[in-house]
Image (cartoon, rainbow, N blue to C red; front, side):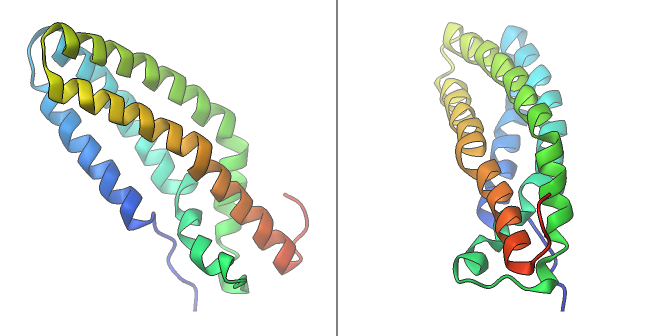
Amino acid sequence: MNPKLEVPQSVKSEHEELHSILVGATREAGELGAAAKLLDTLMRQHFNSEEQFALPPVALLPRLARGEATAEMESALALTDRLQAELANMLSEHQEILKAVRRLLAAARSQDRVEYAEFAERLIRHVQLAEQVLYPAAVLAGRYMRLKLGRGES
């Protein structure tokens, strides 16, 4: 049985919630709305990449932590290989996203829109979580599976 690799629900829900708040911000007037529209464009593309190949392998972590590395998980190796190949680009996209987030944050503060300032700060933490935990965990999941399955280095 080949399990369907999906983004962990906790991460998927966070992406949906962040996107929903951002869509609300795009409806605002002036610099706040303009900054939100730019950020929305960047985030849609980036979240799509994350959900296609960067985050589904993270769903295997509970099983891998129990020592379960099975041949049915091998399909995740293509995703972790792709993440490794595109990691520099993903991190570069984060830099562009963070520039746009800082623009949104400045606009929110200048218009006394606390909810959007808090959203921007939350989005900064989300980017840090991806860089410091989620991407490395996905890469390590692939490396661990290769070792356990005898598939050699990627």
